[in-house]
Amino acid sequence: MVQRRPQARKLPSPEELRQLVNKLKTENKPANASYREQSLQLHGWICAKCGREFERENLQLLTVHHRDGNHHNNPPDGSNWENLCVYCHDDEHSRLILADYLNGTKQ
Image 1 (cartoon, helix red, strand yellow):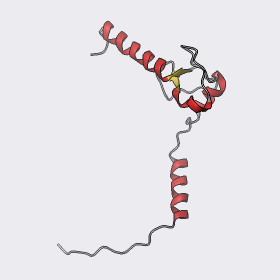
Image 2 (cartoon, helix red, strand yellow):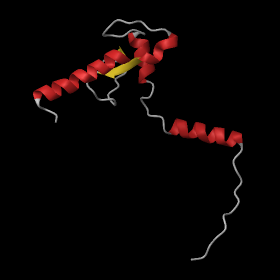
Image 3 (spheres, one colour):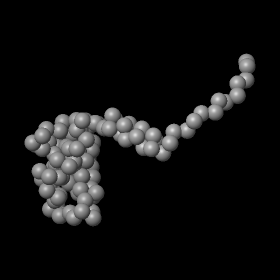
Image 4 (tube, helix red, strand yellow):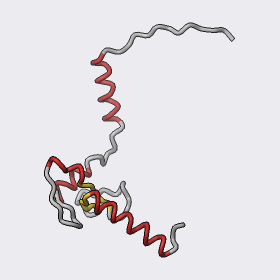
């Protein structure tokens, strides 16, 4: 086996790197990536379960729950979404897991 020396490569400039990162971000962004913003606009900054209201400072604690469990089902009218705080969202999914366990549908 012939040993080869590594070839020196020109590193991209910071501007070229910035452009590449932006290009990759836009190309890999799912078509429905803005459903959270749509749901927040449609349903408001309030948890549908406990009624907790949110401000810009704590808005990251408000999540979008897909009622049918399908994260790809994002109708523009928001009929498959409900805004839930992280605590109610966890509770909602825990209830489904418990129900499956008690019904013997999931092992």
